[in-house]
Image 1: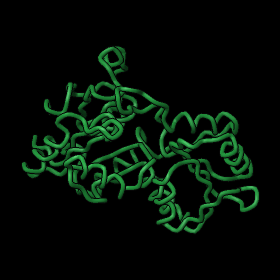
Image 2: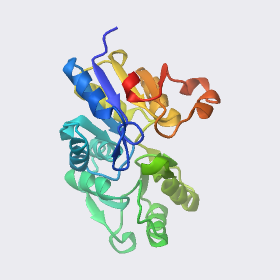
Image 3: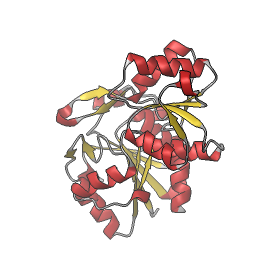
Length: 259
């Protein structure tokens, strides 16, 4: 079968922190030369799409904003589809969420007790504090809808480190409120389906390349894509051996040169 679209996760696949992964630029260039579409799908909500363009271009992978579907962007598109533009939102997160929600016209509030909030949107926040947790708790207890960009417990950083992800912050908010969030990012298929529609490609013509079983591989299988796991990020061979069948990829590679 001829694959038309290759979708790559970012953290642990294309780079770790500021370090490009071996063969990432060469692999993307080769696929593009072959006439394949290449897109990037990430649960990391920290950066704007513009920042991702700069990062990948600096790594020798020229890109445009439309090449990226981030969990922050998918969250904004979801809220827009629900008529939430111009509504008030309290954000536990970084610039990626702030920028995407501002772009659709949402009113970002800093103190739900004074300003009120219709939504609480949470993702990775490396400046997370007890005060942010308290404000999110107040907003949700007073009727704000709780939305998580993703539930990734960890993500791969530079130097081979694994560090806490947005899911740890989401879990803190869920624990104190007792409210389960609506999760937009992987393994929810919402962002994947948006990407497929925008590319005009059916699921069986697309390949997802990721490093996580519980998000990348699982969302790919749920959406009907072909799945490739690369062992340069979170998942190692031991985790793969003990994985449930629903999370097993079609193919496992050690690095992108094997793609």
